[in-house]
Amino acid sequence: MTQIHEGEALQNAARMSKLGVHGLADAMGVPRSTLYYNFKKDELDDDFKTKAAQALGIASTRLFGGAYNPDNHAPAARLTGDDLRRMKAFGDGSIPEGIAVVPIMAQAGYSKHYLDPTYAAELQQMHLPNLPYRGERYRAFEVSGDSMEPTLKEGFLIVCEKVEQDFWNTTAQFYIYVVVTEDRIMVKRLFRKEDHSFVCISDNEEFYPQFVLPMSEIKELWLVKRKIDWDMPPPKRFEINV
Image 1 (cartoon, rainbow, N blue to C red):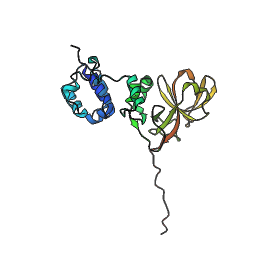
Image 2 (spheres, rainbow, N blue to C red):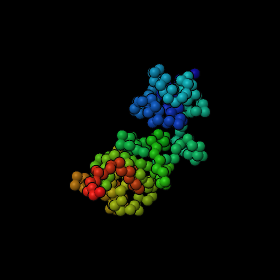
Image 3 (cartoon, rainbow, N blue to C red):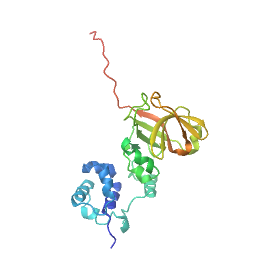
Image 4 (tube, rainbow, N blue to C red):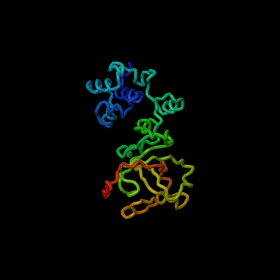
């Protein structure tokens, strides 16, 4: 009999449920990092298994009995990248058509796994009513640091549209972009200095000087379309005249 991998079975069940990985972590009251750690384990603690089964609404014997283990070739086998694309194409409603959000805490992992469709599918989704931003063409990033102040402050969300590599040589000068490299995510204004490099410009130039970035070091490029500003200005004082 094939050995059941309980961590992977839990991961598959979470991906297939309405909760998703992030929702399961919230329902169980554990950090997402704890879930990802347990996904790698062959055997899980009994208390953890019970809590996960209750959150997913699946009997523990079924959840960890092999039905969600890919080695058993059950209908509920692990979702691959092709599976996710197919589900989106046929529109069965399992994959929400919002915008994937990349928070500051996830950005180091994003730069390593941005090509993995299953990683992208596990990102939190946001929906912007009455705006045409949805699907894989768009992504929201959380601003980190103060290099783009006062235009963008840390914690703001920016809604971005992906720029395909074929069009990097025709980008609009001095517009704000999210630049994904091998080891970091940056938000900068870009100026095309030549065919193969950008000058990266911070709005907070006093503390962040310009630098040249070869296009060959860029993995993804996203044009910033909107910002979601969480700040409220201080109350305005009025002269009371009534």
